[in-house]
Amino acid sequence: MQSWFAFMVAVVLVSVALSGCAAAPPSQPEPALPPPTAAPPAGETPPSSGTRLAPGLYELEDGTAQALGTLDYRDLEGGFWQVTGGTEAEGDVGKVIAVIANGADFESQLTPLKGAVVSVTGERLRGASIRMAGPEIKMTSVEAINDTPGPAE
Image 1: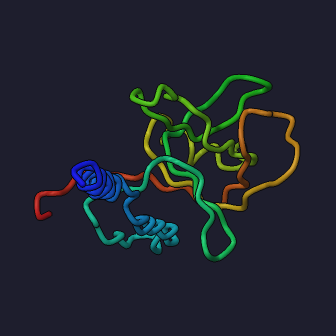
Image 2: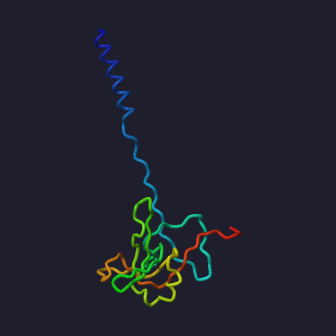
Image 3: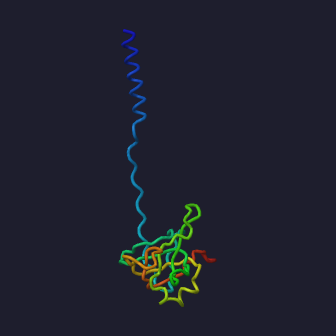
């Protein structure tokens, strides 16, 4: 009788212990961030949310693409403009986000922005490229991004 009682106590203890080890129900997945909206018209300031999107190449709802990062000129293969990004923490500083395929057409706009954080909007080009430095974008506009708050903000 005692062995039967000890057996039942052991079964109950094992059951309780195993139920504590059961897998937790799956958590809800994090919602994806919405894609950035198109840049506001010239002269208008975008609403400030306190944060900026990470450097990257984003597909916009209207079919265009937006490259966010640092504008740089690369003197390779005849020279070309590119948008770079990355972080020291991830070890990818200078990672090419997008090559501006028609940068020579916008030389006068791009030169003063060299080294600045920019938003380049245009058409994402698909297929092979002679530059092979990264994805290409046919630029339609470029805008410096200055997220330093002004005195009233």
